[in-house]
Length: 188
Length: 176
Image (cartoon, rainbow over all chains, first blue to last red; front, side, top):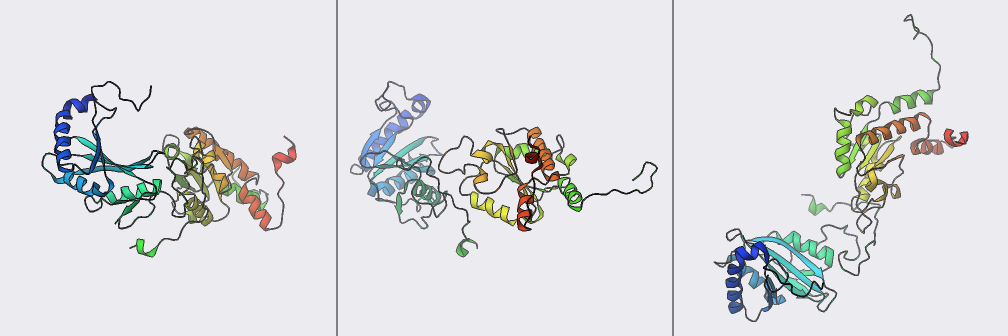
């Protein structure tokens, strides 16, 4: 079975519950951000659990801000920011998983970026984006424009490379025997 | 002491009586990083009670401990910290590597995990298991006590080497 091909499905429980909401929301998004949205994948047409909205890189903050505050959307909670290495052109997809506490449904936004391109930061919208973008940077090397403190968060700061890239070797150990001195500005 | 209660004599070597004291009063530093740490707590708690072997005084400062029990996975970001903790312990110091992860990296043969703590620090006893049962850790402590009693640990060899002496390994000289 080719998992990339659409498979017949009813979309699952979430689609039964939120299918109509999602249809109204995506229609409204298409009207509002006609130029910014590349593609929308809905649960029944694609093997996905929630709608996936592909947004152009430069407008992603506008779309996120709209989804966060607009009545009828209210995706006020940022579940996660992560990325995937597609080994294609453009190479990466940055993934934003949102949750609405009022409507109790989820939605997913994706931004396609080339290697070395910068994505605008979402720190102004959600404080939680700070660490999630640092993790995405650490694992994939995707830089976020305007991020206040884009350092590695999981790996050692002396680490070379980004381990979740597909071209990073699975057993690419980098062993450091001496601990790093604590930075004084981080100790207060 | 004689049977009638009067004081008698016992002759022994000084290093033997010192090692007798060491082996029966080990103060462990628990380095529990995952599920092996839970088994280590069970070993220390009342059911299994490691106090029976003199190893109940848990010290969270490496300056006060002489037995480092590495119980769990050591990832590469923690490896330099483990090395520092080990360096801070005073001689003689002994190391028990508890479980598959600490001994070899276990199932985690990936970029982020140290493939065995013996690539960083010398290890006296390895405990197999994932995680080992409390009996396994108790067996390791008893084995370590045997090794201390016959001066056959890394610490003894380091101290002897510093004094310019060689220690014969009783097991090896017996040819067993």
